[in-house]
Image (cartoon, rainbow, N blue to C red):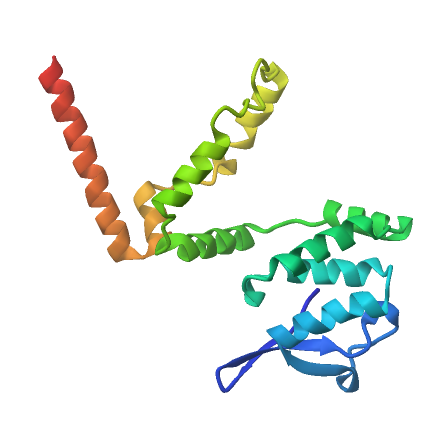
Length: 211
């Protein structure tokens, strides 16, 4: 679902097709209207009731419940979108189109770098509370590992090794300091580099004292 995003007077808007393209609509100006994210979300929810069983509209609404521009959706809307998508049958034609699109979809290194940088910036000033960390720890405690009593085959190990060898490795030709500059900026990178050097120095001092 590709949309044109516009900002007027500090208000964020998105283009919306009055008559959806999947039911005969077009990209002409008389079939487009600017809506706020809230209005856009409500319209797409209503469309799932108007055109019941239309998987493309169901999929579009489901995607909107996972869209960061829409903020946190209500649990009721989230559940409705998930259940609706799971219950709406997918035609064989759509299955083939989705399969073909995924097979031919190549994510460029430039796009990968942008995603990596955006994720790093998003979490830069965010820290999970101790309560949240403890809660996650308790939920994982005692849960069996998916690899318990299993071993990777030599073929799988070789594939993993080749996948991260040389230029395939995202860290190929880069230092940690360079990656930090790219993700966090020079000032933050220098702070992290200083801490890293102090840890290394302390490690060697402790190692020498133990000898």
